[in-house]
Length: 399
Image (tube, rainbow, N blue to C red; front, side, top):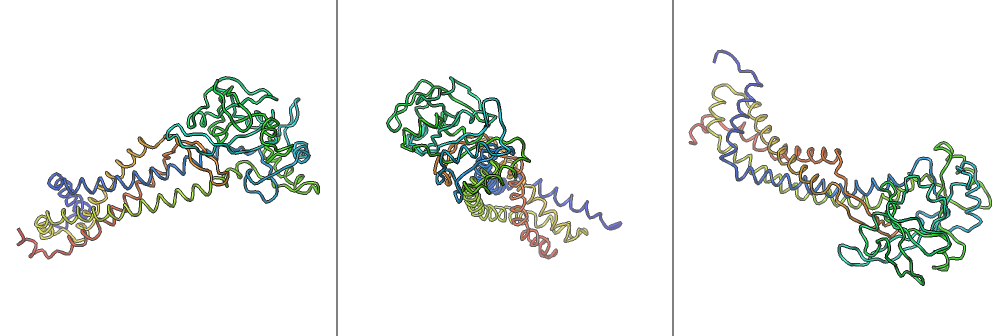
């Protein structure tokens, strides 16, 4: 040779030989690519459940809104507030006010059973009693069909998520719940938040239907600004008449999503890890086949002066290229199949169903590609080392 070959040119040349030989190994290559695509599809698909659930929870609160529960309660289900307590909360400093009064809604939260449209099985659905201020406390709430319920009447309005997932919630239908018949008079949206999974009615009517007297479970309040939260909280937690817990709605709903998110994420990683082991063996088989098919070619290149390092890197690049092809395919399938898919799952803090849409985010797609790359790296490492260690003379005599 006239001189040493450029190292990058060596890598490009060996990699080119490997990629050109893919059609001859299309069976093993397809198995490896499909295996890696399956890992990425499952990983991204399962994690999109957690991402979608978290997104619903995050959009349910606002930085300038707060929730008040009984001290020690971690959800509305285990909270309890008297009527006097709710009035003190509504009059606390920091609460936004309109000519109609303070923007604070004392609310009651109960669970009812309704059948899912998809399966017909009964599930827990949240039934919430609210005060008039609730429609302004949740500033994204709007009626999209029918009308709002009238105070003093056992009428109900239904979130768009609940109307979609649970049977019998169309406008004009009547539900028999407890001792009353409840006409459905409207459907509302709430900016994608958890309220869209709920059924709403007048709080006083719900108290009567469930023999709750004048008790409530929470107060939702709109504040003058996010900065007013500390003033609002300090006024309530230092009041000797009260025994309450105060939280920003954003923090409260983030805590509500923790259990489901951890469970789904853990299961997703476990399943994807088990599948990744199989995909790694598939990649190993493919790359060993590639190295075996090119034994004489690699030996010839080595005899011409190609270095061991160039051979190792080129085999690794081929493995990563196949892995990226599988990763991109899996990410694409996950996006097409899962993104926006609507479902309902149990919120274990409130023991009720929350409707949500799967969210295949850019971060999840990137995570899937990273997993594919790692599988390619691991699957190509041993075959690359084997290719570099082959004795040139022996390899030249193999074929």
